[in-house]
Length: 450
Image (cartoon, rainbow, N blue to C red; front, side, top):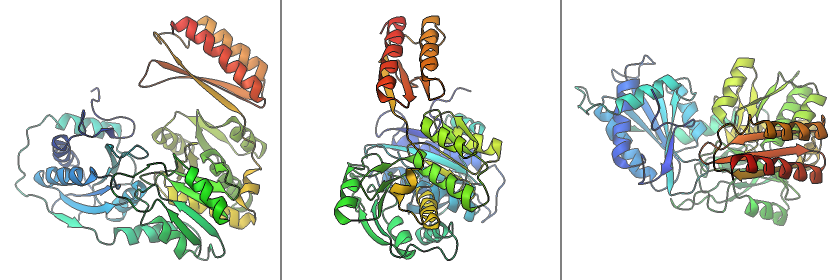
């Protein structure tokens, strides 16, 4: 069945347009309850139990109420977690042996967007076949269950997740003497992250930790880190940490105010595992991971593979290889020995653990990996049919690869939503990289009638 509502990361859109309406959320809650209510899981009562968490955007209140009503009407008990990071819902779903966890969030998007993510009982994203069942159930007429569900407020959700986050490090791990600036993006980590790092001993300054429903991700967080970069330098902090609106992404800022992205953070964690924990089995990146990251891992005999862009694909390849570490340059990092999904706080703690064990500041440790210049051009086309396999385009790519030799790479990616081909070239020489990207783009544009 072709999926009408679900994308690769749940359902997302502009509030009030398309699928993202209170009426749809009511029907989605009912359909979810009917489908997941049939599946076996831990028994909390005679009725299935599903958790709902959300980030801090204002539309979360009405969508929470609509989902809650639909689930109750289908005969499901509901646990209301309130504002919580996305990975917290994954963790709490496992902890409470719930049938599923639902996250109301549009992640790093502005407040006027919202969406839904689902976690199964084991804390992973719902399988495709279950999402298809829910889509089919959306067409069913709503009929009240004989045994209506009830809703419960989970008052200790935040404290449980704080302790879980701290427990991802050794019992004697301490951040004493470390001065950190946190940017909580006015999102779901605002009441969690400062407590985690303070309770571990750090001196913490929290930025963008006063959500009002409208300021989530507004000129702050991992997508807009400039205020954090300035604050770290002005306050003489050791480093800064930026989360996105729902807390599943993290980026760092070193003491010089320079941004440290997900590839660099993955390298630091992998290097620590390789040199201090008996070895790193391997790391999964994406098609967009910096080539310098791949080269740095190769030099240290750490296996590396690329997945399609998206945490779902990264996790699939991690599972297939039996590896514990993977992620994206955006800062979505999965530490599978601690969490089932990308977790900004847990990933940040693994980086800090590495810094502590190496006894080096962030700017020095990240220097062990050389990021290569990367240039990307979006080529808008009249059509995309057969572009990537066109002889002229293939010849242009082959010529560029020959010039780069083993010191770079070329990637052409069609946009999933627009008539675009993204032409990306990486290499050691920034001038060469830009020239080759322009040459390939010109061929793509000519062939595609751009």
